[in-house]
Image (cartoon, rainbow, N blue to C red; front, side, top):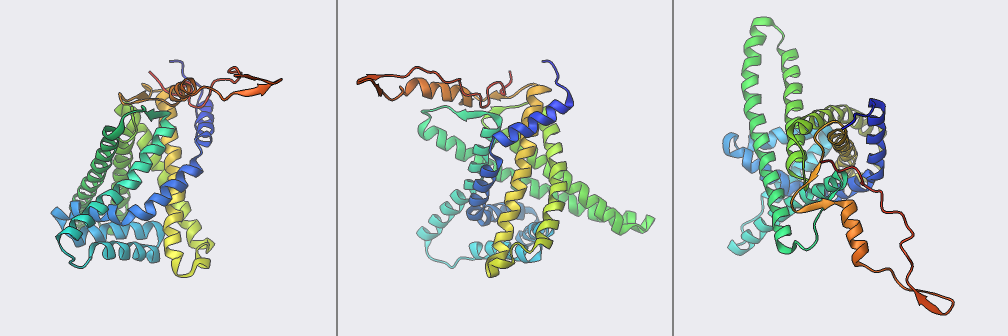
Length: 332
């Protein structure tokens, strides 16, 4: 595969990112996050809480959210978690239904994320999969949630270990605060990179090599770190949520998810373009096909409507160029 110049790589990434309508994808993901955030966090906290306790896991998540979107919005998220988890006893049937609703609610945002990544990867599930396709998609969503909980568990364990090491090294070197901050940044970067790598590797209906995944995940994590600072600066100084009164904290959460999604999708586009131009390519999974192929198949199976010319019905020929969206973007 002939390598393109780096400036062409950057241009292709930007152009294809715009073509994939990231603003629409980010808006859809923000909407699903609004309804899935509390159930998702409850399940993740429950998984990590097996080893470190519910309070420690919840404190870690709320602390992270507070660093991203501020204290008021973090308290709003904490209130959502507590209200959703502290439901009164209403019987076995209601409890079972509540658990089912919790599980389906948590999977909604993951399903939307999978759809968005399929668009960026240039693939789509094959038609006619029926119930099996739905079950498979849900299974992947819940496996991803379990993976997030496991990563949080590892993050808590590493944080506890490094906290002890920081105290020892700080006593010897006298630089406790600096070491703690540096190690916290390192843990955060590794955690986010691992999370992005897991999402890029397993969530889309496509196969991509681990080498390309790690390069894309690390690049996305770097972009995300810069974007996180800029988004926090904007939300903290713009006063954009002051007009919403009591709902301002919730609006802050939605805006943060929206802007962060744009950065995440840019990183996903970077990964896709890198894998296609420099890596081993992006290959549709067995249950998927390139979007361009699906569009052409749908065209062939749907005859064009008749139009009347000079008193007689004629079927127009296919005088359009084939859809160029995603053509040539799926690798070997």
